[in-house]
Image (cartoon, rainbow, N blue to C red; front, top):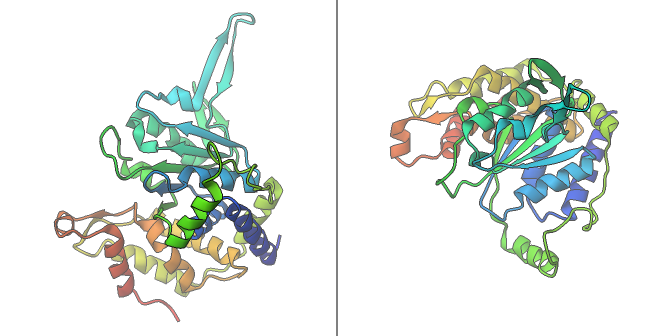
Length: 318
């Protein structure tokens, strides 16, 4: 697949998702970028902003085997991973696969379950494999986690640890829709009973596994010049050189930002990365990877505002 085909495929996927989801274009673009970069996405937003529905529509367009886990306080690791069950008829153990054995996994309200269960996803997200009773089971190379969490309620929640947050390529904050978008939502969905269904709304499959594999292979041919690489490094290192941030971004964050920038360039049909690719992804790629200093928090600074200020300090290549 060439880069023109990648751009056409991305446009077709956006069009299909738009049949059901109103707005949220930046989030759709980030999910497409994550798919080509082999990354995972954390969606944060208040209830009713289409986090779950967006993941369902996205899975429908790419034809991936989709699974959903509703995270609850009583969920156990085995409920996600599965396990070996003894068969009394054959006197042998047989593997019962859990819902993690999918290609696109929606981890709904991931901060509702205790850390022990959250950690069950760590190996799968990092290595795309699951180890059960000492035996490694490979997951699909396209295995992608789209997790959601509600930032409003704090009671009964378990914030994700830093090590797990670092497994997510992007953290995207979903805003409320604009006035015109909300009018369209009410008009389109206000007359339907029950929850909307992507199939009923005409969302079709526009890509199969081979097409996605071809698009991922095309990303490998996108050039990242030395000047752009130095720009990425500068953005990462500046987060460690300011008193406003207690813990800055890791080297892994820089490598993932560079890869995501190449994927974004491919989605635009280019075989080279430009500074705008990097700038467009800095916030979602870093906002969950830094920790503000106590002084910055007392002053009421937000992570996004702090990052925007730092980005302006790093000169982009011309």
